[in-house]
Length: 265
Image (cartoon, rainbow, N blue to C red; front, side, top):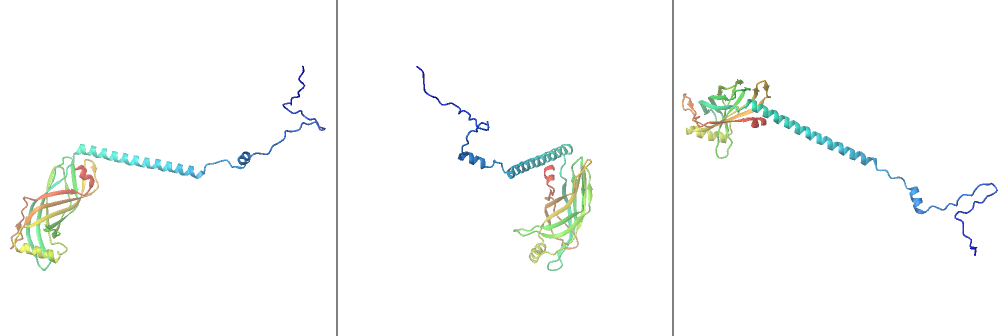
């Protein structure tokens, strides 16, 4: 028994027209997704973000290299200082007040102080391989005040420039004259009372100078140095005979004004 049902063809047969060409497949309208994707521009990242991230990376690298170079220079300087210290073993110079004689210390007016003092200071260089070259040294003498008052300047002087050789002891002498400015009335009144009462007055000596250090062929730039000597007692003379200060308890402190010295010496 034969099957008389008709099955549709998978492809419609081509219809031959008068022109002899085949007809095209029918087109359907585009859906919403196709229309949206067709009109939507392609995504491109903003150029500005790339530049900013690139510049940040360059800045970070520059900062890292700068820090690295600074640390390297510090390490090199520390190593060089350590080598110099191990080779030369530098030490600070020392100073001692050997003599202080007062010829004149009195007031010729209400506040004008007349001063004539001779000072001798011994400078010692304990180094075998280190020398010092000093500029002219300024000397200031103070009357040490009590009760929180400021010290009163009673004299000024200078010491000429000198070279302090290796393992050398030098005696420095100076004449101290009247201060360039008169003390105020209150300070002058207190000092007058001490001088008239023949009391021992506490004196402080301050020396300020600049020094250059020589270690072998190496010379450092000039740097400041201050020497402060305390523990000195003086009594004003009554006549023409000078009085000698008591310096047995005097102690001098050397204070280099250059910070590297504080580490080296």
